Length: 156
Image (cartoon, rainbow, N blue to C red):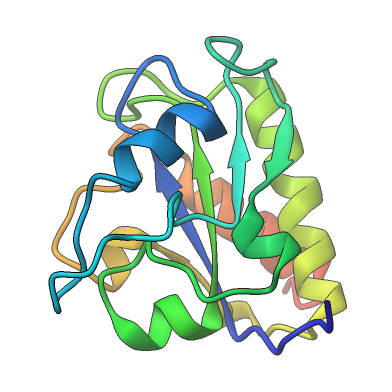
């Protein structure tokens, strides 16, 4: 499949303690879009496990990535069409992501940033585009966004 252009990377949490690509896919297949059509399945492009349903730090690409399809994760058409959705398993309102999850997230977003020449403002949280707490108050956003900027060579 020919790679498409991507303009954003959106970070999400599953808001569950346990999860996997298959589990999220099953839930998302029960959802309907604004026109009443069922979702194709999991709305994210990548899922990163926490050791409960997937290995801790395991990155799994979904069919949306392998087929280079728009996502169904942001709630905003622009971000679904042009944004790579990454979901970390966990409820980051209650517990932070694991070190293995963060290491995998850094590797994945660094690759996406370099591969698609994404600027610093391309990395966003779900809550930056939609009224939601996602990815949760215990998600280390300042650290993640600082690492994104430093990996691009834009650190002060």
